[in-house]
Image 1 (tube, rainbow, N blue to C red):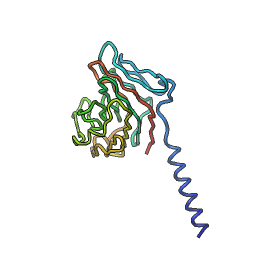
Image 2: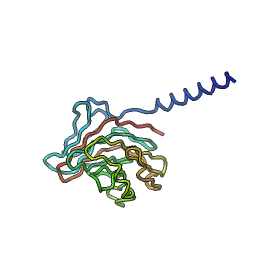
Image 3: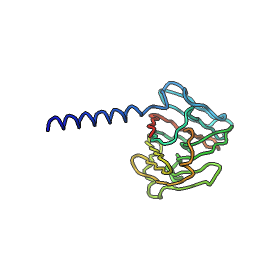
Image 4: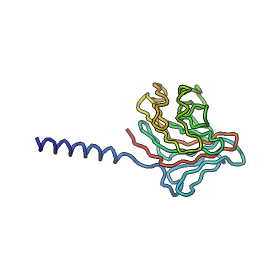
Length: 199
């Protein structure tokens, strides 16, 4: 019995190690290595945080990963200052400041954080139920998780499941991860602990 228990314990440990090995950070807390800036808005690193901020042009801006991803679980933390209208794109591609792909919304209270928007396409695909908006902590650190497997997308905000969506168009392609600055000016968002597990 002890031998069986020991073998089971070793199997669980090896399985856990394998899962941990696949998780890696997309942000090194030092610079923007592994990312590319699109547009004239501000992206910089300060005190170990990734910061996006509206520039004088007050236009859209994006920070895109060099790598592309298909099925994954992405977790990150954000803190909104000022307006805070931003987002996390996935399965995306960018030309200039025109992005194609899907956005998990990051926005001020009452503006559907955690919902999925298709840029330059069908627009809003799904918004969270209104009562889930209370999961957002404006002016504090928030944890968002985005899981994409095949056609299925699920988002969580501070442990609350915001949406689940099944969409064949999403499942038909892969693409980069990209953070957004919305147009209009007055936006500042801090990011940290950007980790991804490829599934």
